[in-house]
Image (cartoon, rainbow, N blue to C red; front, side):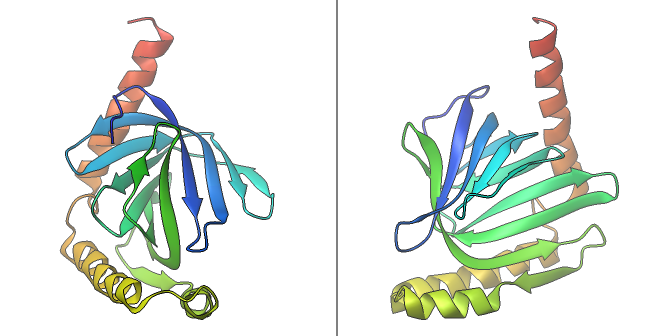
Length: 181
């Protein structure tokens, strides 16, 4: 993904038919790995496909994978860490934004480590309406199972210490920026 720590980027999510699904106005790159990029959205404007706009209320540590068919958003709240996982194409950075295709299914993970799969009806509707190829449906099924396995095994990023290290890095980066360090 050719991004550098400290870069500010847009994030854009599309639907299978190429229509814009959702955008985030700013995301701060806090880590770049061989196969994923970590960004923080904090008080970032989100614009939905229907034009609705809302402002994120808390820092969210977001993991965009180059070779996985999901991305993971961990929201740091007073009540604990919530995860919102989007089944989506691998993410890429094209010089304009981090981009992916949203494939409807989501997994929400609660601070008590329980989880629920969301939007099955939306997935069922869109796979017919947008004619998802069988190969895409097979990948989605496989990656959803892999994602749930990661959650159940508490693999990174599904553990407090991993997320806490990133949130501390984010706060340190903000402190240094505000104090000209």
